[in-house]
Structures are given as structure tokens and as C-alpha cells.
Image 1 (cartoon, helix red, strand yellow):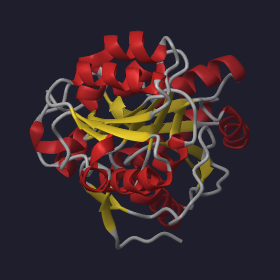
Image 2 (tube, one colour):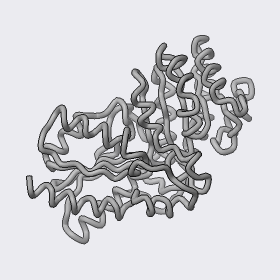
Image 3 (tube, helix red, strand yellow):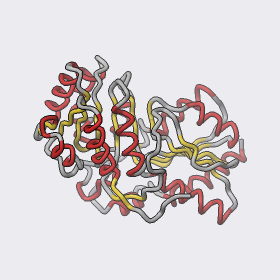
Length: 320
């Protein structure tokens, strides 16, 4: 069902798609904050030098320029690390982009713990919360190369501010090639009756591994849903699933506060009652320097943690 052998960077999906859409639409421009190689924006820079702007280590200025370019009818794609794309420039995004609903695509790599050795100062674990709170901001968090490629193409055709989040490491590229990316529409990956796992980003593959283990070893049937769009959320798909399973786990490479899990909790409290929920997320702490998988294991953001939470949740479900 899934290609387990191919490993590719999600950021490469962004870079390849950016060059592709640059050839399709002359209104697309790219801005980078001194990280062209890391953001895989080289292809665009080489092919469209007159539409590529190297701003340097001046991220706030980059957001202001992007907002101005959008007024002129261009479609700006900004590129830097997630931490520098959000917290460092939050005022500029709020005032110059979100408030006036500018057609700017804020594209952020190296998100979460998996930036690895760069450590806590670079590991953005608050960015989803920051961006989803901005009125009118669309927030997308992709899981592999193919989905990031498709999402980049999709947001180029969508009018309005977008935050596109992806990662640094090579990860399993398991979703379909040449897929259609529907903003705001969740993807049901597996069907199950016992429990719902809602996941995003790098935790989608970890959730699929958990699903396989639980089904083969213990006969537990989990319904796994890939939430690539955090905002707007596909409430219909989520509610349909929990109406069947009566319980839910959320899994994300983000802080426990402000991320996917809290968005799901809001849906449950306003639309349903007596639906137990467990969270797989960073528990209100900063990260540290280390290899990506070592960090995911230490902070319990992995397949094993999902499996453990499933067992806890099923016990809670029986009590209710």
C-alpha cells in the first residue's frame, strides 16, 4: 500500500514544486533569508533569477517586501526555517500580511524537533499555534516529499495568506505521486472501529507504523486520519470517525499547547461529549541538541508512544 523504501526530504518537495510552478506562472516570486540551499530554492533561483530575491538575514524585512509584492499582483513565496518564519517576524506577519489578507505564502522548513543538532533555539514547537491564531491564515503541515510537492502547487492557486510547514530530515515518501492536494480536506488512510488516530507531519508515518503493529499483534483496529491542513480543519471527517470509534488520539511534532491536539479538543467539546482524547506531543518544554530520531524517542513523539497512548485510551473508553 505504501512505498517504505524511498527516503526523501519534505523540503525537497517544496523546492522542486516551487521551480515547477515558477515555470507555469510568471507572477510567482520567491524570497529567501540567506538559506537558499537549505530550503532547496536553488532551482528557482537558477531558472528565474529575475524573480528570486535574496534578502539575507533580515526575515522581518522579507515579510514586508513579500506583502508589498502581493499588492503589485505577484504571488510571493518566502523561505526560511520555521522558527524564523514565525516567532521572529510575528508582528510583520500579523500587521502586514494577515490583517489585510495578503496573498503571501510563508513556507517554513526545519520545523519541530527533527531539525536535530541545531538545538532548542532553532526547534520551532510553537509555530502552528502562533499561525493558526491569526484570522484568515491557512495552516498546512505536510508528511512527506510527495505531499509537500502537491501542497506547494495547491497553495499557489489559492488566494490568501498560507503557512506551509515541513521538515529537515529525509523521511519515508509514502503518499501517492502526482496526488491532488485539497486544502482543508483530511485524508482517511486506514479504516477501523476501535480508535481514531489523527496525525500530522512526520507523525503520520509513525501513526501508520503503530496501526500496523496494533492490528497484527493485538487485533486493534485504528482509523488513521492524515490532517495535513490544521486550519481550516476538516471537522466532518473527524466527527464521522469518532462517532464510530468513540475515542481519539492526536499525534504531532509540536508543543502540547496550541497545536493539532487542542484544535481537535475544541471540536470535541463544542460538537460532541464523552469522547476521551489522548495527546502525543511535546509536553510544554523546549527541545535540545541531538539526532532527530533520538530526540523523537526522548520526547516520546514516535510510534511506541502512540501505541502506549492507544492502550491508555482504550481503558478510558471502557470506563465511559
